[in-house]
Image (cartoon, rainbow, N blue to C red):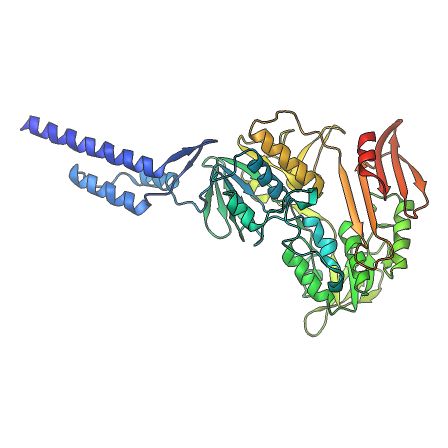
Length: 482
């Protein structure tokens, strides 16, 4: 009798081991980078398996609640099929990172991109340049400027990602990160699994407070294609436009509005346009060019509030000095903020509002990287940590990061800051403007040229060349001399 019970017990234990092996093989797949993923069986199938086994083993209850909770965490259903590498963010950096994974044969069935937008990654600078050109002047439209056409590469349409075996999850944002389980929570309620994670969330537009009218209908901010589409729709019927901010966004939108023949006024608190980059003399030269195209400026001006009409739409901008500017629409270009909150809350170190990384874009947590606008990286040439909000850095940081992640290169990122802008490029413009800036705008300035159109400004400190601004110059010559 005792021998029979022993044999029966051994048989049941063997069944249990076989069931556990089957479950493990179907549920837990150990992938490159240490990610553990789960597809099948579901939690309910597992529950039935253990109930059956419990009955056969004469157990009067299932395993403890704490054990079941651990099983749910380990074997939950995740929304992404490709889990070895996950990129959070669908902007420029994501597109160039995807290309680098493909070039190294590490994308097919391995890479997942999570994008807030409903379209594949594209060259974002176009949104405030050619995208805003008048409708009869051949404006840019997708799929014409998907990454990586901005650097002379292949146009990566949605079909390109499918052909390369890259999974793209559109229309959702990541709201949480659990470093210990290597999982992400999304706004749609799904959970994602990753082996290695690249954070490429970029920035969001800084907004005026709601209490002064910052969210009134007719007030525009530009960060994505949907924003640009709304702006173009408003420009088709607008007679007057007020732009708040005299930086990149403000100046590029003002140039486009001039092509639409819209009565445009730019207001900003500084003494001249592009004050963060341009010296006063250069800023005034550009102000004169814009004024020749019908654009007006209110300098050293501060917004008090935006005024709504009877229909709730913005109709005027009131300034602190008592002036009121009537308008049909408002564009706000007052800067941007890094999208880093979910990751900072998870414990990643931050700097300058962004996610702090080393020279290979590794964050403070192993297996997690950050690139593009959101990354605060060692600016080796100047010996400081900084964020750079420009497409050139987004492209190059993405390529360097992926190569570092794949152990293809181990040298630290050595970046020369580069900015550019193109305005008045639409057909029929009397002067198409393209300027470039390299380096750092510190020290004394030397200006060369008569602005017709060639012009240059050099920044020197302690006898060393620190930065160069070129209007209609050669980018290759400049890069070689800094």
